[in-house]
Image (cartoon, rainbow, N blue to C red; front, side):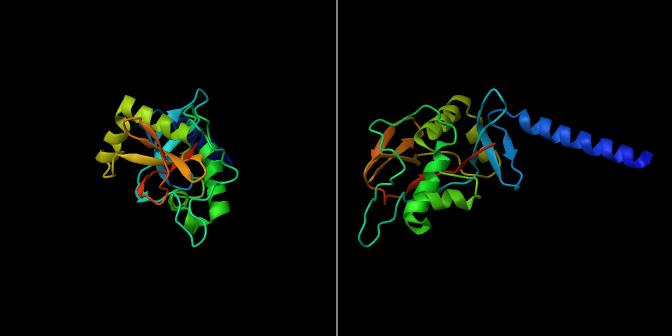
Length: 196
């Protein structure tokens, strides 16, 4: 009986310690999710929740052309004349789902790549990617940790899941410049993010 109580106490303390450790994260930490995928923390809110960026990236198209439709407008993603660069936590997850739902994975390579990291990973919205780039430039830890662990650092331009117009999406350069891209079949970097 005494042994089972000690085991129960040990189990409870282990769970509390693990929970405490995961909730005291800071920008630049490597975060391990329940499914054992990992990312680098680039945003943490006051409640200990935040966003992590994938350890890998790939050059992909935003949309592949099909036989009859080129650069199709995604109905549920609003066309933003000016990109919404404020952080709208989780918006990209919805946009990624809309891209895959309307185009299918084969016609939405950037969204497909993001999902290949795991079901909860997604292509960031303009606001989420802007937050990543601002914090990567401000803190510097994100690229240092990527390089130290043998991964490719953030560099160049990145796709967002935000549209600017019918057949155009926003991309953001690591220097912070935001541009419309009407050539959605152009291969530029995609990097997935995930909420915790």
